[in-house]
Structures are given as structure tokens and as C-alpha cells.
Image 1: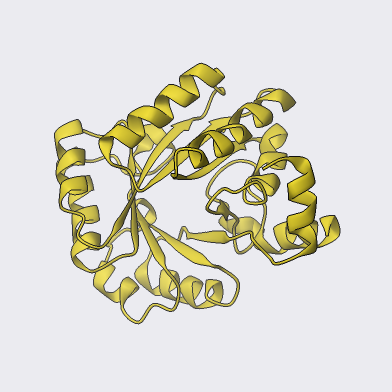
Image 2 (image 1 turned 30 degrees about the vertical axis):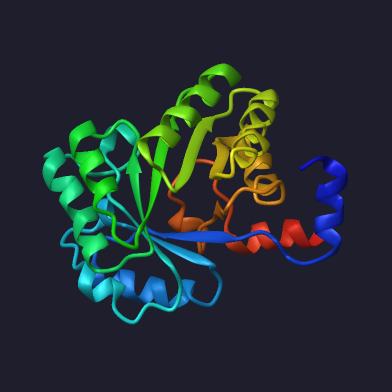
Amino acid sequence: MGFGSMRRSLKGKTLEKVCIPIVETTVKKALRAIQEANRMADLIEIRVDYLQKPELGLLLDGRQKPFIVTNRREKEGGRYKGDERKRLSILKEAIDLGAEYVDMEMRSDRSLLQNLIENKNGTKIILSFHDFKRTPSQKELRNLCDRMNLLGADILKIVTFANSWEDNLRVLSLIPYVRGKKQKIVTFCMGEKGKMSRIFSPLMGAAWTYASSNKNCASAPGQFTIHEMKEIWGRLR
């Protein structure tokens, strides 16, 4: 989508979607946060790696919005430090419970990853890649997209760190590249210089972006609150 098309989309139907991550440490607090997020979010992400004692059955029961279940390991910005097989078994449980999406890191154990993809039932698989230090070259990013597709991802998620304004453009350029292959992508940059990509990615055709319910619940550097995000989109219109 070019900037002319983007302007036209801003004048018409609302296209952007927002996912609110739940980053609470107890199920009780998480259930309260989900109830609050239901009023504002299009999707809700359960960050299992934050929970001391995850009880997915309770969290997914009676949900009002599509859920993404994530159990992010420490080396990719999460809090999970344990065994890889056990970590991914939580995602298998989410699939068995009928979660709409599970998010698995591209750099997960390959055999365990492939097994989950092959047995996803009706759940959609988000394959994710995070780089907390830099934004790779356009060639590297496109190669990454192609490898994710070959693995059988339903949605690609590529999140990098912006050290320059130009890094935003490199990441946003993935949206038309992936959509041209009839695939869906979530992509943006982290950090202060990456904030603009969080705003523009859904306007350019990304499946959704992420925003916190309030300033104390951000799950990544540079993340807006949902109120800030919607205020900015309103002003752009």
C-alpha cells in the first residue's frame, strides 16, 4: 500500500486492529486485565511466561475476543527460563483448548516446532522473530519471511529494534512483500525511534499491531497505550 492509498484508508473504514498483551503474574490479575482489555482490544495476547502458575483453561474459558497464547523464552524478550519441551507443551495445551492463535519463535527447537505446526488443528500459527539490538538488512528480512513461509506459518511476525528512522521503512517494506505472496504479517520496530512503525504498520496492511492497556503494562520497549494509539490514528484522519 502506498501513501496515497494509506490516506484514502484513513478517510474510510477503520482498518487497524490492536492486540493487547496480558502481562500479569497471577491468573486472578490476568482475568481482571482480560475483562478490561475486552472493552478496547480486537485481540488479546496471553503472555504465559509472566504467569507464576498458568491455568490456560480458566483464562481461555468464555473469552470474548480472539486469543493469542505466547510463552516467550528469555532470550527473545520473555521470562521463561525452563526446558524447551515444557515451554512448547503449554502452546500444545493452548491448541488443544482451541486458542485462535499461538505464537512460536522461529528459533524454537525445530522438531518440536514442526510437530506443533503439523498438529495445529484449527489454531493459527504465528511464527515470530525478534531482534532487540538492530534491524537486519532488507535481504535478510525477506529471506527470513521466505523461510517462515516454508515452515508453514499462518502469520509471520517480525519485530526488530530501530537504531535509525530508516529502520522503520525497511521493516514496513515487508508488508507489501509478504502480502504479494498472499500471506499475513505483523511487523514493526521497537524502541523510541521505532514508534512510527507501530502506528503505520496496520494502516499499510499488517494484520495488527500491539498496544498496552496502560503505561504500566507495556510488554516491549516503545509500546504505546491503546488510548495513545487510537488518539494518533484519530488525528491522522
